[in-house]
Image (cartoon, rainbow, N blue to C red; front, side, top):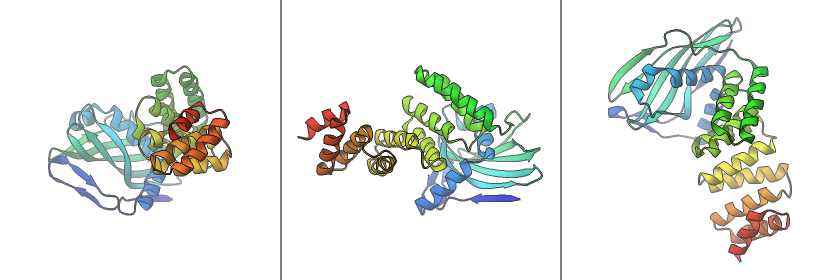
Length: 285
C-alpha cells in the first residue's frame, strides 16, 4: 500500500471566502506539490472541478485552478484506494479552498464530490455519475502528445492544448505532456500556468534540454529573471555554447543588472547567429 501526504505550511482561511497562502519553507512545499500533481488522482480531481457545473456555480464561471494542491492519496495494491485533495480556486469572487474526495476501484479513480466555502457559507457538491473516471494509459498519452505537437506546429494552440490536457490526464508521468501543455499555455499568454507545467516537465525529465529551454523562456516572460537565469545555466550545461540560450541568459543578466555578463553572453550569442542577441548587443554598448 502506498500512501502520500502533502501539506503546505502556513495556510490560513480568512472570512468571506478569501484565502491567504503563506508558503513556509518554499522549496519543501514545492517539492511536495509537484509530487502530488504527479498522480492520477490529481488529474481526475482537476478534471472533475473543470467539468462540474455545480462546482462552477459555487466558485464562478471565471474560476481558475491554482497549481497549489495538497492532501492525501492512499492507493492500494488491490486496485482500490481513497484520496482527499485540497485545491486553491481563484475567481472574481476571490480565492477559496475546494476539497475533492476521490475513490479508486479497479485501478481507476473517480471523484465522489467536493466541498468548500462560498462567501462564508459552506457548500457540498455531489459528483453524480462518475464522468471524471479515466484510465491510466501511457501509450494513448504519447499518441495525444503527437497530435498536440502537430496542432502546435500549425499554431493551433487551442487544439494543441486539448490534446496535451488529455495526455496529462492519461499519464501524469509523461514529461512530454507537461512540456507540450506548458509551451501551449505560454503561446496563449498564460505565463503562470506555463511556468507551473514546465517546472513539472523538468521535475520528471531533468535531462531534457527542450524542457529547460521552454522553462527559461516562460520564466523570462513572467518576470522571474533570477529563476530564469538558474534555468538557463542548467540549459547551457546540457547544450554548451547554444546561441539561443546565451541570448536569453544575456537578457536575464541585463535585467538583473549584471552588464559585464550580459555583454559577454550577447557577444557570444550574436557570433553564433542569434538575432535577438545581436540587437541586445547594440543596446548594451
